[in-house]
Image 1 (cartoon, rainbow, N blue to C red):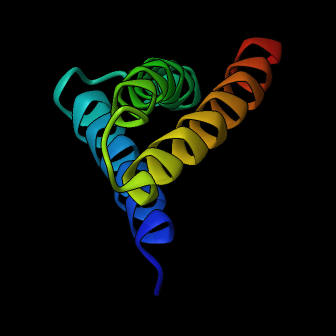
Image 2 (tube, rainbow, N blue to C red):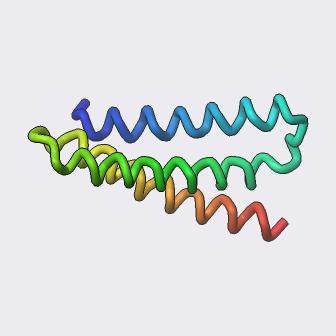
Length: 87
């Protein structure tokens, strides 16, 4: 498996794990979709910023991974928040 794909999967799994743990500890299971969406949005923004800084590095594979995962997390965050708000 290529490095950018590994970075994407790790970022996605981390965001999902953090969201689920947060909703369980705060007893807001009914609002899981909104929490997941917000964590994805924040995680996507952080990943994009990290990816932009990594563009200055010599190895561009890390930057590719973080930029792609940032875009994917932002997309999934907007979709999840949209579905969560509609309920």
